[in-house]
Amino acid sequence: MNFHINQHITIHNLRINGISNSSVLQIGSAGSITPSANLYNTGGFTEPAPEAGDAPDDASVPFVPLTPPTGIS
Image 1: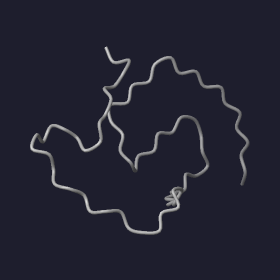
Image 2 (image 1 turned 30 degrees about the horizontal axis):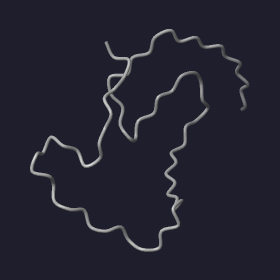
Image 3 (image 1 turned 90 degrees about the vertical axis):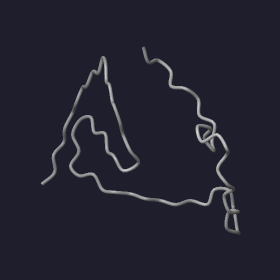
């Protein structure tokens, strides 16, 4: 059975306290949500990545520099 749904959704404020890599945020209707995990070699790499180095002495310093979140009051 197929349904055809027309929706008009207005969201004035949406607060999400946490979401992880495997989370699904759904707004509106969906017949089914199928999982998808695609791996792409967009850089054309042909060898494994080098081993990660030791953690820095200051454990509060991340390996990847992160920018602070914006728009939070």
